[in-house]
Image (cartoon, helix red, strand yellow):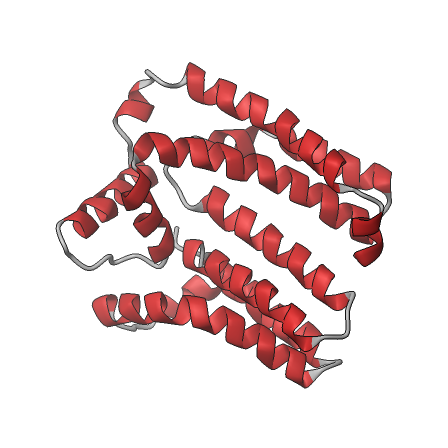
Length: 229
């Protein structure tokens, strides 16, 4: 990973991000007056309802509490524009991750493939946490690869924080935290503790608040592997 930073791979990542941003912004422009954009339905309607609950001072009964809080802060239009940027960043992160562990050609295919991948473009315009969870998860994975390239244990802290934030946008992120801690712990137990602490510091407070509001029953553990849907 340090080698990649010295080779200045960031300009290519920025170009991929800009390429990916274009179809996402075009999609938002085309759908601006679409009825499903003006009146959210299904999962998006549930997110809007959660934001309204927050505005009224009520508890958010959702396993993705971070998304609703950010949504409530910025509003619908900014949320969609922000998701377009996050989607473009995900494509750049795929390039960086692919460049770190595979060949440049495969990394480029992954980055550009994601840039024009229809479902990713579609979800960047939906008021759903999928895009934010993906971007944070990929950022956490990249940070994990960066941390693995050095000897200092503190380097694993940012990876834990990012994957903790990803878990607050999608409970599937908990799987990444457990697998990451196990992977790190096989070689360095102290680094695994630093990584886990970073994840817990950011995700435990909001998750604890959600559990207090919703309670814990037999169905909730299923969120660990199947998510909120």
